Image (cartoon, rainbow, N blue to C red; front, side):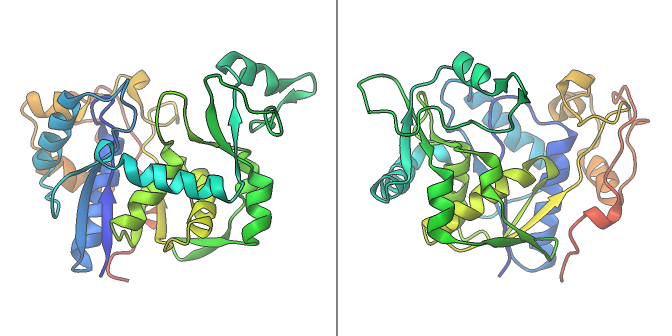
Amino acid sequence: MIVTRFAPSPTGRLHMGHALSAILAHDMARAGGGRFLLRIEDIDGTRSRDEHVATIVDDLAWLGLAWDGPVVRQSARLDRYAAALERLRQMGLLYRCYCTRAEIADAMSAPHGPVAAYPGTCRGVPMRDAPHCWRIDMAAAVARVGALSFTDYARTIAADPLAQGDVVLARKDAPASYHLAVTVDDAAQGVTDVVRGRDLFEATHVHRLLQALLELPVPRYHHHALLTGADGERLAKRHGAPTLAAMREAGEDGRAVAARLRAGEGWGDMPGAGQSVALPSRPAHPTFGS
């Protein structure tokens, strides 16, 4: 049975890009006679707001989307992340990182040009009693599991987690990073198909590694193209695009908005849109029922 999910963070209001991901995940599940889940990724206690959770629920209902089962919140699952983190620690794959944001920025801006990932400054540094995050020793982890792959729209992709560097798995101010929490949750909820934006494609390489290390099932991935503004950049608040809540409060028909997204039509002429927005081409959408 197909199981998909929509997993927003309640750190702000949803926009059209979120709506597209939710609709594609919902429709894939419904077309396959499966389940569509709603998970609130509120692991960041300093930025998550309960009022945004309520707005997310209202926005999805406005779009005509219904989910199966109770809404799951990451803040109620901290013990699961702690157990996964401890398992990786026992494997000898984690190390403490004491670097400040400024020190990390300096380390990633060498004279020969910026590097793409954290260069492992604290790897091998003796432990001390000081604020720290936990990073994974990516080279050691990759050596442990060997070659990996995942599917994206049925294409086989060779996983390259090394390119992401020694990513953080638990922050100084949060018990788990996005990478760890989403990997643990997708497995625990039986998610078979992950539908999300192309901006998260690189993160999937890390998630595939964590699945191998923690002996978790591997879902199918569907990274859809992103909605873009008139400047060709990813649709975001800086474009002045309205939130779904603003459109809803202005009296727009949410089901009509969803229908236009499903049809792959632009929405620049919709009331309150304020600009043209490019929608992903049809081949970038999941092929439902296949």
